[in-house]
Amino acid sequence: MIPATTDSGASDTMSQARAALRDVVPNLVELVRSVPDSTSDSVGTWTVGDVAAHLAHVFRFDTDAVAGRPVPQATVTTAGMAEANAKMLAQDGERAPAALADRIAALADEFDDIASRSRAATVDWLQGARLPPAAVACHLLEECLIHGHDIAAATGRSWPIQRHHALLAVEGGVLPLIAALPPTALLNQEKARSFRARFDLRLRGGSRTLMVFDHGSLTLDAGGARDVDAHLSADPAALMLVFIGRQGIGKPLVEGKLAAWGRRPWKLARMLTVISPP
Image (cartoon, rainbow, N blue to C red):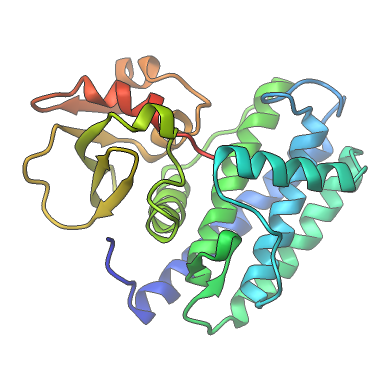
C-alpha cells in the first residue's frame, strides 16, 4: 500500500488543500448562487438543487470528521453512498440556490477554521476508514471540483479546473481513500471478478502509482512499475473526470491529456468498466 505520510508532509498537504479550497469555494458559491432554476436536471437523477444540497452535506460531514465528531453511517460503494446520499437529501428540503450558497460559504469557513487547528494524525471517516485530516480536506476539494463541474455543465457555465487543484484532489484525496477503504469498495464486483491488470499511473506534475487489479480487488503500490500491462500518463483534471464518469476517454486521448502505452494498453478501457466510484 501507499506508505504513510510524514507529519511534515501531511501538514504541507493540509496547507495546500486549505489554500486550494479558499481558491475554489468562492467561485463555487458564486456558481450556486447564480443557478437560474434549481429544478433543472444535472447528473443522474439529481437536479441542480440536489447537487448543491449534496455539496453542503459533504462539507458538513467532512468538517465533522476533521473535528472528531460522528459522521453518517454509510458504506463507501456506489450503492451504499447512493442510499446514504438519498437519505440526507430526503431529510433536507432546502433547494433554493441563494440559501445553499450561503450555507456552503459558512461551512467552508467552519471547515477551514477547524482544519487549521487539527493536530490529529488520523480521524474517523465514512465506513470507519481512518484518514489523515489532510486527506479529508483533499476529498472535500475533489467534491467541490466535480460537483462544480456538474452544476456548470447543467447551467451552461464555465468551470475550469486548475491542474494543481486536481492533482491535490487525486494524490491527496482519491489515492489515500483507495488505500484506506476495503480493496473491493470501489469496484463493480460482477465485472471485476474476472479482471486482472497492473497499471503504472503517472500523474502529470505529480507522482507515479502502481494500480493492481486482482479478481475484484484494487490495491495501490508506490514502488516500481515492473511487469505492468500498461503505462498511463494523465493530466489530473482529465483523469478525475474520466474516472468519475463525467467524461469519456476519447476526447482526452485525442487532446493528449491522457496517453497510454505498453504491452496491453487495451486493458485500460476494461478498467473503466470495472471501476465503480461512489
